[in-house]
Length: 133
Image (cartoon, rainbow, N blue to C red; front, side, top):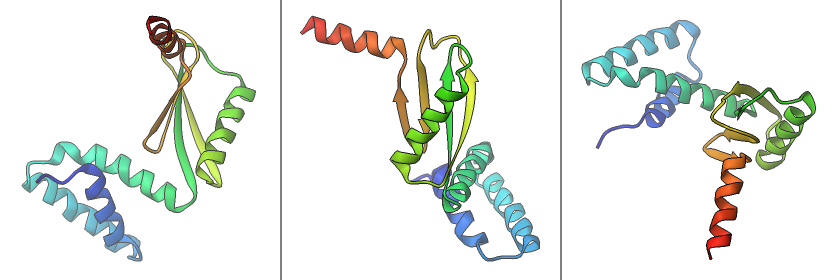
C-alpha cells in the first residue's frame, strides 16, 4: 500500500512538532532522502501543500481558493470568506482569487476537501437534469 501525500505530511508534522528549528531542518532533509530512496520524490510538492494545510488548520486558519471568469468585488470576497468561517468555525480565512476564463460566470470555491460550485455551468446542468425528469 502506498502512502499518500497527506499521510506523509501528517507524519512529518507530528514528528517535527516540538522540535527546534535546526532539528526540523535536519528532519526535512532526511524525509526528502526517504522520498528519493522510495522513488516517490515527485510527491514532495504535494506533501508540502498538505503540510501547509495542517499548519494552517492548527492555527485556526483555512486556506481557500475562488475561481471566477473575472475579478470579484471586495464585498463578494468578504461574503465568501464569511461563509467559509461560518461553515468551518475557523478564526481566519486566507482567500486566494484566481481568474479562470473557463468559469463562464459565477464562481467555484475550494477549501479544505470541499468544493462549492456557484458557476453558471453547474446551475445550467442542474436545470437540465430537472427538465429532463
